[in-house]
Length: 278
Image (cartoon, rainbow, N blue to C red; front, side, top):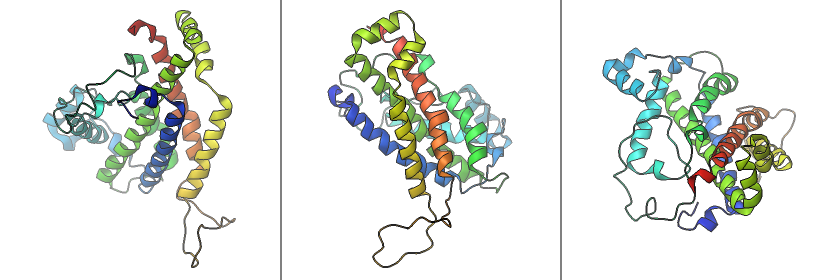
């Protein structure tokens, strides 16, 4: 998003383009995670390898002390220093984080007109995402068992989770855009504290169905196993023998059952507090 230009950042066509690019990143990250077994030991609390000092630091940030959380928190500490979490649609899984003191000082992350109003705590759903990813997505995506690649698993988990998280919070731009476009209708729903009405306000079922089908088609394309190709061939020819690194329909289900509902939850919670920021 162009944070110097609120009209551009809140343009639904621009938002749609960004969301579609994020789909690509999410699909590729899931493909990469699937090469490792579930490796559920990465999520076991009180990882003894971290030692008492790191465990204390990690638990002070709200973690159960697992190795996966350590990789997330350390990555976020690094990203925080270069102002990642000053972007209006970026939220960390853990805190506190180091002060943002590195990188550009041109004002791109600071001296600008605010695009979003205050984002309430109820609209910050990273812990829900973390639980869903570890308890539902990983067991369905990855082969059961432990292959010992705990470090690689934790690194790839960070990539998957941050990519999905960014996609979810980008819905804040959608909510703000719709509020500004239909202010009178949105204001009435907000004043009435009408959650169901706000959910209907932001939901376009036909668009969601098309988005899911697009995601499945992308997953079929990106995840296809290609043994070889003919000279001049531009694309593989699908057949009954075509195999995939991951199940494309499962990727569609991840969007339908988890990413889209969390996105809409974020949007509704944001809108419910939209007037209190004025």
